[in-house]
Length: 501
Image (cartoon, rainbow, N blue to C red; front, side, top):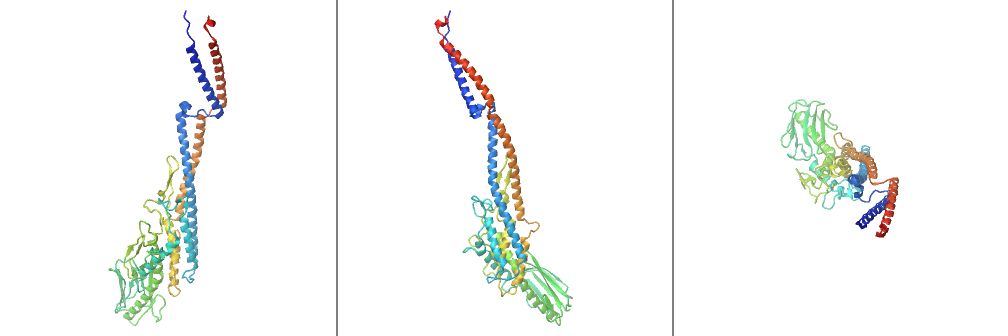
């Protein structure tokens, strides 16, 4: 009879006890930490699910961090937009109530206040969030706008708004102060009104003429340059007859001039005296037209000219410098020329691409949702606010100018109308509403993320955590098995050939 050794069996039993000891250590760790495993591999078949859930939780954390950062920017932007809108309304109200009472510098108190408000608006347009300029489009590391001093006064060789208004005023009024119109002396019973140069963008443009003058023949506007002919014929007009000329001004507005015939030898404003015959009446009409046109040129035209200069100045950016009067001399100029960044202040210094402003900043707030919240200071509503406040603050008057009060009245009327909400044009509130839409989308996404995060966190807990009661039961069972194995092993180790026999 052969006797088999026990060394191989002992080795297996020892390995089994080592494994049970390892399991016991792991169960004690689970009991202490509450975690099923320190690695994904220890989770068994749930390891893939755990990795997926953990990735989703990390993505939610990333989205929330992004939304938190963007939320700060949007809150600052909304504050700036609200203040700009408020300033615009304040300036508009002050302009409506303004009276023409200039100080030694040639400006009213409301104009001085507009200069202060302009500085405030420009400061708001340079709002930053961290190191990011909110109103610079893609150029978020570049200030959005120039300072109010540079915009109004210029910067060295670079012309500012005041200089451009002065140049444009000279070009629009012309050397004779007639709005670039020519009204020569009547020839017999015929007189004419003509623009001074074909294709010139300056001065008043003849738009239409209407006459109730008895026996008169009126033609035009026609020709190049455009002109109107008024032939009274052989019959003298009657008292109460009138002629109306319509002019287009540099800012695109129109104005009418109506002159009425009177039998009085001392005609009032916008009247002309009837002479002994048609030729004498034509001479009186020519004189009345000259006076009236000069009055329009010094008042309404001057105001429209300032706004036209403002349009050119504030429609410019680094890619498109402002169009300036091709001079000197300016009073006889007949064309515009492109300025440069070297000779003209560019008020908007941010990025000026062709894509929508909102698309210049985007943030992903969910796996399939992103919001656009970019801003540019040269958006229509913001540009209009800055332009009109700046033009009102830039114009000055002379106490010796008989047309100064009328010119101021025309300017404030135009600026106040432009600062009002014009149907069809972008408003500051429209920009704020688009930003608010992004905020609403983020708030909804944040709420969804909270719910999703709670669900995923619970699922992750169920995968990675263990029940203390379950672990305790496993420890007790393992301790019992381990104790039994140790006792059996001890007996086997005491076995010898003598004991066996």
